Length: 48
Image (cartoon, rainbow, N blue to C red; front, side, top):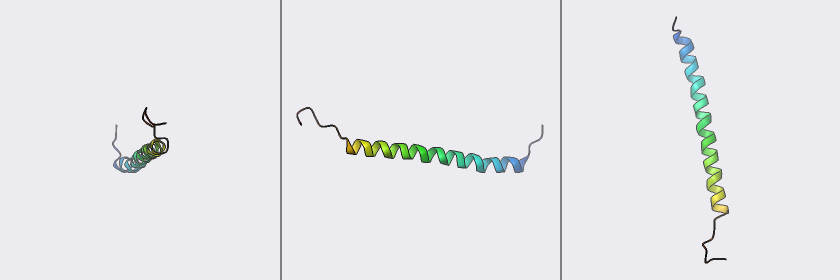
């Protein structure tokens, strides 16, 4: 079995883009959840 260094280095950039995409999607989901919590904030039991 041969180890192709150039293919490995090329795959690192593809893997990095994939991981960056995952972090961007998680960040967008967290931002939307924060926004929804701010807009639809629950009132306490005494408040109506």
